[in-house]
Image (cartoon, rainbow, N blue to C red):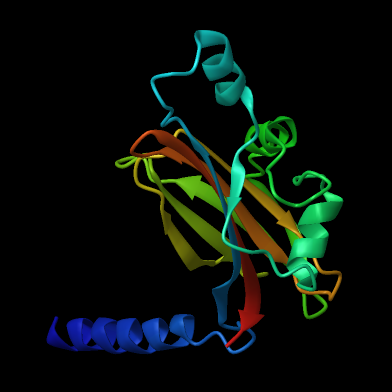
Length: 193
């Protein structure tokens, strides 16, 4: 009986070691490379009329800070018609199309190899999302955890924005704080470690 037990332990140890060695599998990381923020402020003087207030409430959110117009990510986002012609405002109608997309699954090519990606919402905490990448062994690699806190809307787009052959994960999210709606666009690249 002892011999059988020892043999089973040896098989278990050697069997586990072989299963954990996956030589063809690569390690990836995901980095934030661009963030663009917009805000629609609702702080108005008491002297304006209700009609003026309604018009201000319907305007497109204004850019916070500056955009580098030479950035290839900006150029890719511009081609998606997200900004007005002066690049000072977010076009909310276009924004809403990306919130509705919410790409959750698909295949992407990284360094001439095909991978399957999946964006999953944490079932226990609905504002946390995980971006997974699976290789040919169908083992999931968690690349990024997105903690979005209290956001109204969110959406993901997987696209090569800058046409360099590297896929980007574009995160769109809308949140409210202190008399204003905030709209953020974050661009992440997927690269080998």
